[in-house]
Length: 365
Image 1 (spheres, one colour):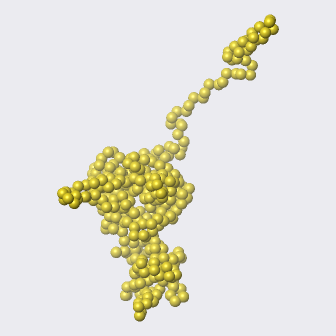
Image 2 (cartoon, rainbow, N blue to C red):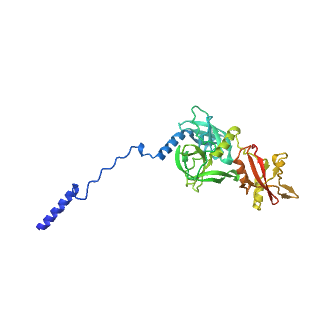
Image 3 (cartoon, rainbow, N blue to C red):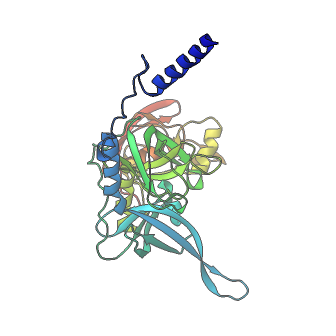
């Protein structure tokens, strides 16, 4: 009995010592370290991203469009909402760049600035072949244009960090980040012609982001977000943007003339005829027209011709500046990357023989 009582007393003493912190081998835990100040908690990369967003935000705009509709019974006209997208200020004159598909079929466009103002916009020009369009707004204290890389300094690399700003699903001025996933991608464009040279990114791009800017880590414009690749219509980690090199080539023409005309070789082609001969096994771009007295005519380029109901091929372009041309679209893409006044070397094939001819690109019409 006494032994049992002594054992119980010993157990109670040990429990009391444990909770009092006097039990050997169980020291009190150290107090938690104080949290760093909020500013110190931000990593350098985070601070850079925040700074880029704050700097670029005011230059990004939200665009809403509507279409004029006439009631077939009452003959009354009205405006019906058509869609929304994004854009950004291009210059001090109030030009705004967006995607062509954002304003397609629209009779009216409204641009909302980051400061809350809504301004009526006028369509200046469209380039469906590159899914680009230019609007113009007027007002006081318009936002500054986004900075762009100097010529020759904007080359992107796969793995480079990029930021997209836009208005997905109407959620205005949304920032998403990612990397350049691939370069030189292509997507079907208007009338079946491919839009080439696109940037692929995993920065989330959703409906409403169209027309917004893609920026590098320094806040410079590197592309215009144009499309997503997703069966559901929502971001699946694959988005595309028109590179700034294309934008810088197309937009000035849209501002000046209202349309984009790529430079010309002075040769005539036909997409349907060319597709037909390609299906029959003839690779390349079939020349169908050579202007009399032109540089091409002086250098002996001969077009295809009809004889006794048969198409007799003349010269076929099989390469342009060393890049293979298997179809007409390949040649048009190579020409579109250049400016009027530049020289291009064509590799021509005729009756099994090949030769090279240099032509100077002329202004498009």
